[in-house]
Image (cartoon, rainbow, N blue to C red; front, side):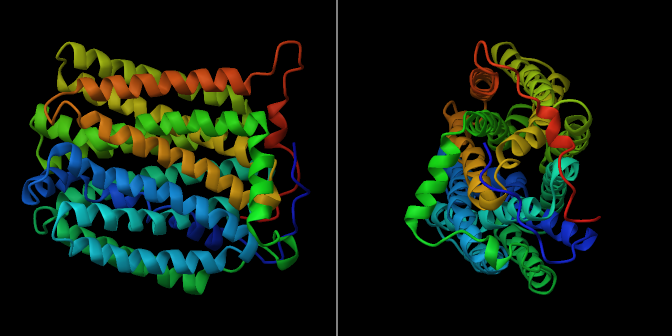
Length: 421
């Protein structure tokens, strides 16, 4: 099902714009990654229970989901540039407020707003990418979004681990504010409007409801969104729980945790890049299946480690496979969800992004229910989430019995890209 023909982009676009769109995906997710090495110290300083402190992660995830739901339809109506400027500005302000929070409850509230602002960048990057790319270049662009997300995941914990030697967790949030300010300046001078006036949707909730109904009536769109949501539930359970497992159970220092996390994130980057290429040259659905299988192996390894104590190497390899498998699923899932909807790419992107972070927000606190010294909840949550993703993909993305199999290879070759790299 296709919403409409692809609008003509009226701006010259090249590597500079592509780079900025990739950077726009960073400031939301890095809000979690940078301060993760200091999460145990934050928990102790604010006198919070482990599960309550993990709600600072959950609040950011929920905000990232809700922010995308708000920004996506608005960007279809008002264009991409204005919401991007508003979102990044709000992010800078609220990051400074996080640094000044005197209690964990106020920090949770500030983190929610920080996530709302950060979600704007993610949805604008995906939607603007759909404005200027199609065919094979669209798939490659979404692969690069995955890569830059992995890069942020590497730089964030490594930088956070290094900064914990000279800064407390409040200082880390001030660093986030500075990062946001740099991105704000770049957006102000480097982000043109990618959605022409005549390609924008009408105003009002009736139009948004119509667009959402159209998307939710598409079996392939729903399958891609639900499957990706469950995979990201496993990923964010890992993000929330690994710091306690690696530091609390296995005794790694914050710097050691950052190095282990960086290794896994490097796998995330490489896997995301290869998945974009694989989806383009082989099969979108096949690449998604490979990603689910790899993530499933990682989750199963964590479950085994929870049932019978395993060496640190087994846990790190399992986390590596989980992260790599998630990265492999991302480009094909994003392509399946957005390729058919160029004129409501913001709304489609917002639903996909909201599913990723909403499912993650639900899963993240579950890994702390047994306290900070148990890996079993992490193994259970990740295994159940990946199995659910595989079930959703099989049920919704596989053609009904008797129907012809969809030709997913057209996604890699159709159309002429409107953005020249």
